[in-house]
Amino acid sequence: MSRRLLAALGAGLVLLAGCTPGGGAGPDEAASSSSASSLGSADTDLLPCPEQTGTPAADTDLPKAQLPCFNGGTLDLAKAPGVPMVVNFWASWCGPCREELPEMQQLADAAGDRVRVVGVVSKDGVSQSSSFVSDAGTTFPSAFDGEGDLLAHFGVKGLPNTLFITADGKLAYTKIGKVASLADLEALVDEHLGVQL
Image (cartoon, rainbow, N blue to C red):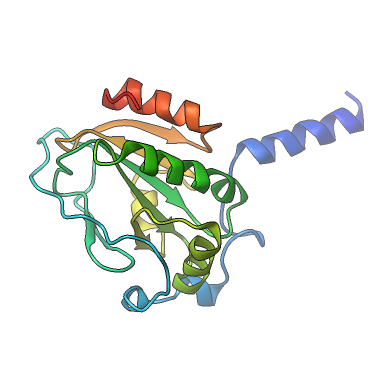
């Protein structure tokens, strides 16, 4: 193989891997140590996380995790959401996340109360993620997992990733990496959550 072909293949593999913190691509130490206590004072238009209504099925693959949300509320995976839910893991430093977040907002706008869209800021700082969502015009609720503990539960290092959770709290599907388009995202919602948008 030529050096040019090997270089092109190597670049392609890096792109396919998604964003991972470290190696200069992730948040700095000050960002990752930001306290979740500053979430309430973060200047964003993000909606607070809605209350979840019930206990999930016993055979759920979700951890019993509770994460504080920007502007109030809690993402509580120990409780069933009551409606199908899409949970998108993102960070301000992740290029594919920046491309995907507007599509998640479009999904949230199109879904209304039929599907709940919630973000999880992972491996990022409060001020960095607040600034990014303000610039991006994002309003759907987002929880904060600055150290990436919830993401680590699923054994995934890169971002973005998206969970599709049924109304009774079962993990129906995990999409690793960026969703290509809003149409693809809506197709995943239809296929795994049974909701046509």
